Length: 394
Image 1 (cartoon, rainbow, N blue to C red):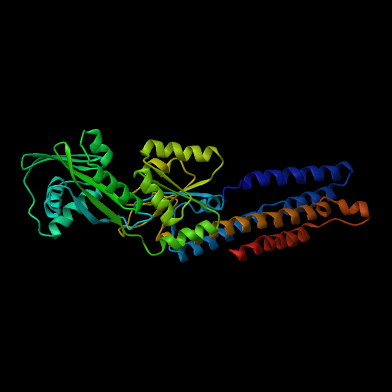
Image 2: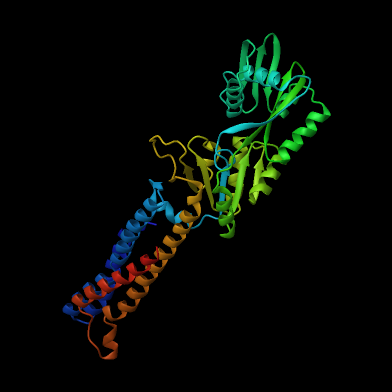
């Protein structure tokens, strides 16, 4: 929005003024040629665009601060006006980011025994599911069996030797790939958990599944209302999650969003975003500082980030948002700014074209005189005021 080349406009103004003056010089009037040159050059100066861009930047800066949004690239506001598709990861955006255990379904052992065994395996885990399993067992005062070895596989789960038993805690597809057997009852329960919108991990001992742990994410109060507002504004809202398809369907139904892309690793998420862009969609990504969508950032047009960590940090996005509910207002501000910019440009251009005829000496054809330079300055000031008028709508 603020990258318009004023230098090109100045060169164009000088060229047009020179061509207009040459006609007067050719008729033998040096004085008239100088007057025409100055008048045309003044009328064609890019001052209306410069002042309107400056005024728009000031107003946008004020509006952005009122929304408590931080931006290092204020010119990206114009890109927000073009956004039609919003992408985001499920975890941390639609949810509060920290899961809790909603149900324990053991098979052949007690709930406390299953939880203590899973917590022992997850003692050193970094994944949020592992951390909540361990923390819940500690809060309940359970005694954890001794662990002699432990290894965590990213996005899959953990393996450990607990009191001499080979224990795995993690995603059901990963465990089944390792040859773990699930009873028909457990598999049916897995589908039921996914259909109600919860995540699930399983505990296995040896080659047999010994139970399920259902995990639930709480949803912030403003999320559903904001998603409805975005849908009414005709934005396509799409979420990315590594969960299976049944969970994705439940998620889509629960939040009323257009699409949920499930089971996609980082590289496939990037390709999916590039596919959407190749079909003419203008993409904005919303992620969080705690759960960044690294695979999508380079494949979108605008990057928005929710600040969930209150510590000062380097801005790694085009816009840093205080909450999800700010989105509709920010998008609306982008559209208002783009409409104001276009109207301002239109007013300046139409005014300059109307004044160009008398400035170039066209009134001579009608028996009139020349538009003198001091009058050209007065009209240029009027054009600046006209260019500033649309900014009142921002």
